[in-house]
Length: 275
Image (cartoon, rainbow, N blue to C red; front, side):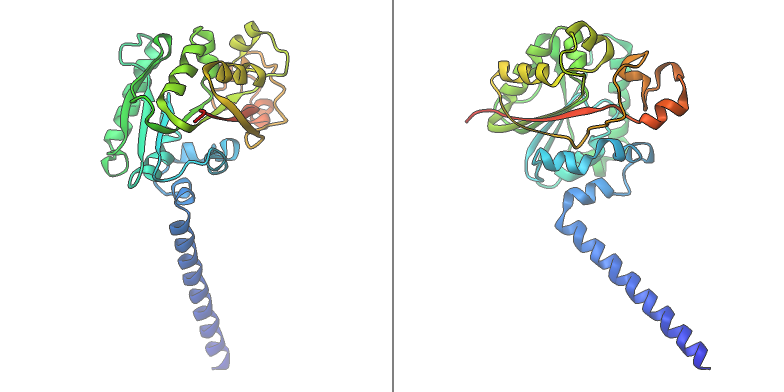
C-alpha cells in the first residue's frame, strides 16, 4: 500500500514538473518572439536541421532584427529564412521577399521563384503578409520604396552578383532601400585574405575585404563583424568550390570527408547607412 501511494505521489510530481516546464517554455516564447519563430513547429525539418551551421537566432540577433521593423531579404531562394522572418514580422512588421525577377531567364531562377510562390501560397496563415518583390541586380532594381527599410539582409549571395559583375549595383540598391540609420546584414562564404577576384567568383568564396569594400563604396559605414557562422574545418580549397560542401554536395565527392566539414566558413558583417 505504502509503495503504491509513493509511486502515485512520484507520478503526480513528475506531471506537475512537466506542466511547469511547458508553462515556462511558453512564457519564454512569449517574451522572445524570435526564439519562438526559430523553434516553431511550422519550420520544415530539412531547413531546421541546418540551424547548427547557420545559427539563425544568433545571426538575426546580431543584426538587431526586431518584430516591428520593415525587413527586406534579398534573394530568399527556397525560403530558408522566410520560415523564420515571415512569422516573426507578421503581426507588427513588414517582410519583403526580394526574389528573382520573373523575366530573369535562367531556369534556376524561374524554378526557384515558382517554388517560393507555391510554398507561401500553401500556408496563407503563416505567409499571407509576405510582400513578394523582384530584385534585379544587373539593372540595380529593387522593388522596395526608397528609404523604407529598417533592415536589408542577404545570406550567401554576394558571389553571384560578383560573378555577374553587378555587385556594386546591388549594394547601391540596398543603400537606397534603407532608411537613414538602417542596417545592412551580410552573410557570405569567406575566402582566405588575398584570394584573387577570379578565384573568388569561381569558388563562391569572397574575401571580407572585398565585401566590406563593396559596402563602403555604396556609402555604408562598416560597424562590426561576428564569428557566429565561422567554420574552422572549412579549408575553402575544394574541387567544386563551396558547392562541394553540404547542402549542395556538387559531384557527391567523398561524402564522409565533406559531411564531416559541414557547411562553409562564413563572414557575418554589419553595416549602417549614415543618418
